[in-house]
Length: 98
Image (cartoon, rainbow, N blue to C red):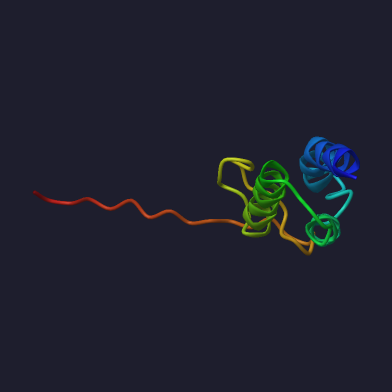
């Protein structure tokens, strides 16, 4: 069973990010879909520590994607989770005097 879970994690790792960013038409598969798949894996019995860490990392990537990007996995703006608009993050420049 662990071998099957390893293959599933490998597959999701390989295809999740490209399917989220999609093409000009938007996401191919939503973050809701991928989150559901990952939570189904979490429900499996006897997951190894490495498998738990891999699934957790993928869930963190989904959180980052849903927040609009600008992180390690999605360093550029991405479409919002609903696929309707691009999320913009405003960064304010501050000057501190010594």
